Image (cartoon, rainbow, N blue to C red):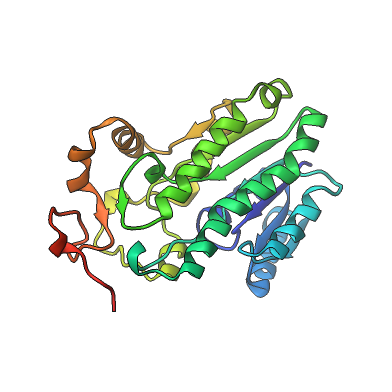
Length: 272
């Protein structure tokens, strides 16, 4: 059985990846910050799917946390599939966030993806096999969420995955790197950031299991970018190609009282 490593594995898309891969017979390494939740997940996966599950407790916002996962990625047995799913979002609009929080966002959303991919990729190329899924966001294509650096960090994940995944050395080795761009999914990411999305219509939400199934299908098809569901394929296309003036009224603005962009500086607020 092949071995997969999933970061941010205790909730949302990461948990769905872990369960789906376990059902397919993959042994697993699950990574998150909270030990007892990892142990509970590991026990459930062992019981449900009869697979071997390792647990790594690591805070990927720190260099030490990244190194603990990197050490496992460079050891045997080799990891055949890496899912870089861990990510964070901040509640306040950018003018009022704390520098340390912004750097932590970049550390998890960008640096950890870079470091873990860099750790596992050389051995994959040498063996001539391996898969990497980097979880980005449909908002990586444009200004879908204003006054926050989250889309910018996910734009880096998309550009990084395409640039490295399409390179001749990676392709010729038979290694696949794919960026996954989901839309809104039930996850603790929004709860931890304190962002209230209860007003979003039901049609905007995606089921995490269907997101993962679509991602794994696209990965096997050799696609470099996966956008689950027709509605978010259209949204991603629009963010990438439509003129910015047309997009702004439809964008979510974290600094506007209404939640949406409106012209005029009087719409900017400072959170309390």
